[in-house]
Amino acid sequence: KEPKTIGQRGAFIVIEGLDRAGKTTQVKRLCDKLYSQGHNIKTLRFPDRTSPIGKMIDSYLQSQTEMDDHVIHLLFSANRWEKAKWMEETLKKGCTIVCDRYYHSGMVYSAAKHNPNLSLDWARAPDVGLPKPDAVIFLDLEPEEAEKRGGYGDEKYEKKEMQQRVRELFYTFESDMKVVNAGESLEIVGDHILEKIEETLKDVLEGRSRVGKF
Ligand code: DGP
Ligand code: NA
Ligand code: NA
Image (cartoon, rainbow, N blue to C red; front, side, top):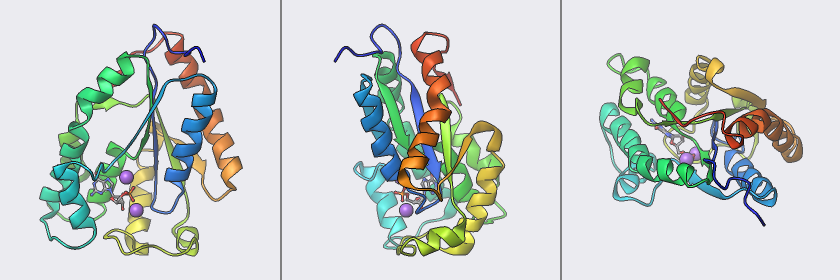
C-alpha cells in the first residue's frame, strides 16, 4: 500500500486513561485501522518495562522494590525521555505513533499520592520539553465500572481511592484532551476515538502542523 505519510511527518496520538479503561485494546484497534488506511504506524507504551529503567519501574509497580515518591516519578519521566529522540525521528520519517500513556499519566499518578512535597507543578517539570502529542484521547471510566471489569490487579496503583484521585486530576487537563466514554462497547469506543482524531490527522498529513514540545 502507498503510505499516506510520504513526504510528511507522522501524527503523534496518545491514548490515556485509568487502569482497566481498555487502553491497550484500543491502541491495538487504532493501529490496525490506521495501518489499513495506509499509514505507517509505530506503537509505544509507557512505562516501557523493557529498558533497565523500565525494569526498575516494573519492580516498583509489583511492590518488589520500595522507592521515594520523587525517585519513582523521575524514573517514569526518564523512561519517556529514553524514547524522545526515537519519537522525533520516527515522526519526521513520516511514521504515525500511537502511544499507550504519556506525560499526563506521569503527572496525575504521582500527584494523586497527596505527598505534600510532590505538587502537580513539581510533577510536570521533568517532562517539559518532551515531544508533544498532536492528540490525546482520555478513555474515561467511572472507578466503579473499572472495578466491575474483572476487578483491579495487584499492581501498586490499582485501588479504587487512588483511581478516583487520578480521574479527578486527569480532568484538570480536560482542555488538553479529547474525552471518550470507555463504558461503551469496544466498537463504539473505537469509532469515537477515530472521530476525535480525524481532524488532527488531516492537519498533520496535509502539512499544517509541526511537532511541538511540552
Ligand atoms: P500500565 O502498564 O499502563 O498498566 O501502567 C502501569 C501503572 O503505572 C498504571 O497504574 C499507571 C502508572 N503510571 C504510568 N505512567 C506513570 C508515571 O509516569 N508516573 C506514575 N507515578 N505512574 C504512572
Ligand atoms: Na495497569
Ligand atoms: Na503503560
